[in-house]
Image (cartoon, rainbow over all chains, first blue to last red; front, top):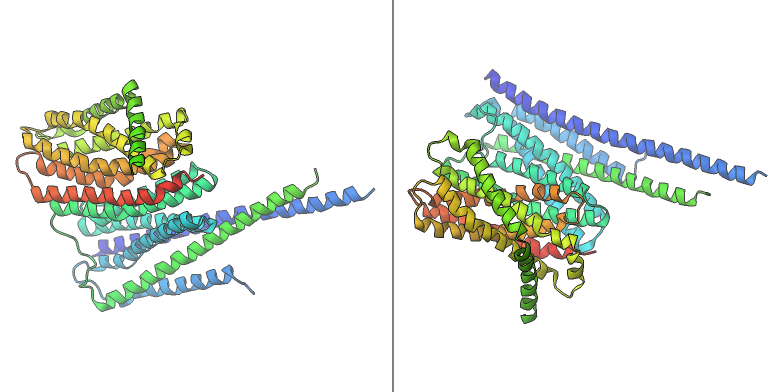
Length: 57
Length: 233
Length: 228
């Protein structure tokens, strides 16, 4: 009986673990997206400065 | 917080998933009666089978998306297809893992070649993993087209695999294992249905989440391109 | 109708003539099949006294692997000598291209089977009966339909991909598993002492259903493979 319970726990632990790993995967993708957004916002900042430099003299 | 559109709908589906799967776990362990034959091991059934059916639903969604892509050539169908198959592979891999544990618990061995469902799911995982190999070795519009064609081919071979394994086993082992069947008491059936709906909600939530991520990724890519184009050299 | 059959003949003859000139593919397939059977024998044939129950499985595992090799090979001249570009420009229906391709794969498979089936019975079957050969020939024909149709569809996609030699077996073999199960089962049912006819018929029927389903899938999707 107790060994049966072990297996049930193992099954639910596997499901839990796999789904959490999936969350980790999603998180890493989100992190990549946020890096891209940061890069883009920095690029647009540079872009503006370039414009100002060009218009200064 | 005023979320609109996709954000709100993902939040709604996610909440529904959380509520239903919590209810299903409580129901499966605390409310549903102990199975007379299998004892506590039978409680694996509620999520194992729900996940298995959900993975088939995911492949069916990908099949429909594949057909629609071939007809209409709209990019969103390709995205639904690839995300669906990714989730289907995740769910069917979970089915194989949990099924193997169940086999150990009830038959004493980790792998039972005479169980058609377990073997079919192993074949299905192989089939759909090769979908991603195909995808990674083709580019552009052709990638979407070939992926759609392969999602149709793979979906056609799922019932064939199941039937072949099952027929082969019925000639060798006439005993068919029945662990679900119509003899399930109503109290068990109710909790099974709850966990099935919970898993379907989980699938929808994850599908929407990944589609949203892809959309953001795509929008960012376009933004980057436009920025590079408008930049003074 | 006559135009279509003339085109079909021209396409098939082109493949066969090319093959007759070089004999590369067929010889490689036969050699591969013989070596694969020896690999099975050395892998587990020694462990049993009577290999008759294994013969069907050895035959069809060998033939499935050989089919993957042959299907992949049959597209190589199309790509290397840019035959396909010409064919796609010609006013030939895409489905006819599929049928012609499947027919030439079918012929390759028959050539391999004519040599492999007798060899399997010599190597692995104790006391084979002459009528068994006719029954196994039916299995071969039924299995060849499915193998050649699905193989032609998948190879047409693999040929345009980057990892084509690697990709085709990975795409093709999982979908071939039902064929291996059914044709090995049918062969097993008639080899040896007792012929189990209901089992045999069930498996052959399954092979035909398999071929019909993938013929429909290929018919519906083959157009899209070349839709550039």
